[in-house]
Figure 1 (spheres, rainbow, N blue to C red):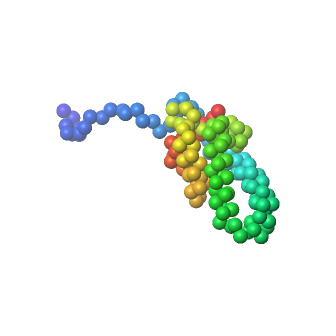
Figure 2: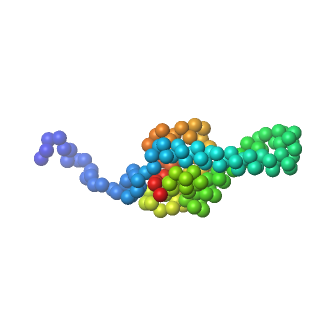
Figure 3: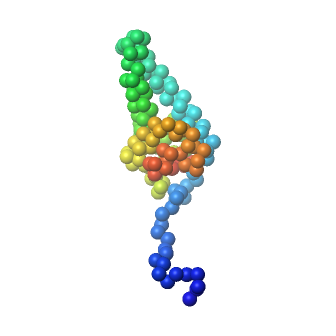
Length: 149
């Protein structure tokens, strides 16, 4: 008997949980940063259109008085942007350009709940800076990965 082993320790066996997706190359930080910039530009274009519609409907003074509602609309547009593109295509326009896509741990398209959670997590303050970590917070919280397409 080995003197360093404890006979009362429970048996140890691998349980099959992996920290990375199976058989895929995870997208690097700079590619993901490029994706973020492209998607941010697309979001601003969409919000510009929404702003024009609000301005036409309520006028400049009316839109200014709707401050809180306009902020809520901008949050809904942000979440809706990602839910629409990632839910329908598994990719946003930025991911199309940069050659990446979103998958679950097994390489399958993520569920609607994962996409919704991933999109809502983007509202966390300073979340865009999480790309400096191994995975973005919106990936870790939703159980998704961004891989090369």
